[in-house]
Image (cartoon, helix red, strand yellow):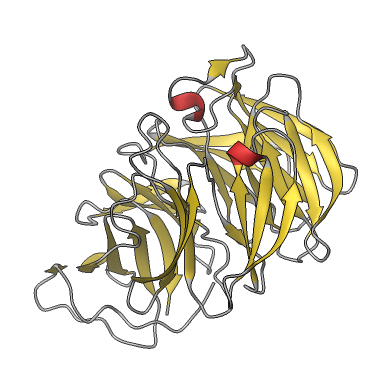
Length: 349
């Protein structure tokens, strides 16, 4: 997760007397409406810089890997009601946070873009066309198309490069693809009506956690509005064994979980979503809920959660700022102002 980066030279907001120093880590909260740079030694906001792909109505980006040139890949979907905004993938140079390349994808529902661990390929789920587009991150050329089930909504590749996992919201399935050949090697049923739509591979590369919304039909809006329809199964997270290709545990939830993220040692899994001001923490050894942490506010659509590489903290980007969670006590120890920025936290040097 480390790359060489310079703090932005121009800013719209800067803390008086503060100055970023090169060569040590900073927390970058990157969103479409701006980028907040935080000094982790004193939890102070030091600068607010431009965001990526400004104007995108919502923006998700891969916080697990960056491409072979250290760039951030993000995407936005078309707006179904009026098609006033088209879908696109945005590639941003993190040294300047300027958009370096846009890949237009028309009137499609395009969901969370992800990268291979070596950064050579980007994978983009096209929900309206039931496929994954694979791009060479150096040339931006599409090098493969993978046909999957109904409504691919997310994807992630395991850190060992062995599995590319994509959940399909209308097929109630987790499809597993070989990233070396881009061929489907497995399909794991997540249960009728489960609405599997988001996924995270575990640090040990043996399992995947799949968020299930209990809705079908919402290629653009999912469970946030029509035409999505509830299946009656409710919200859940399901843990999948990638070797046996089976669900080994299902945990019901009382909120729409969209993301989950692990501590670097894999001990805890933090689950949260855009409409709930809390994160549910699962002990990965027992697959039982260890704690529910109340957040100061909800993350909204653009908020995300990211662990610090040293494993001591987890950072949750919510409306009120960046909340710092101690992974030993599972308590919030600070809330850092981000100048109104909600986005994906990155730890950059």
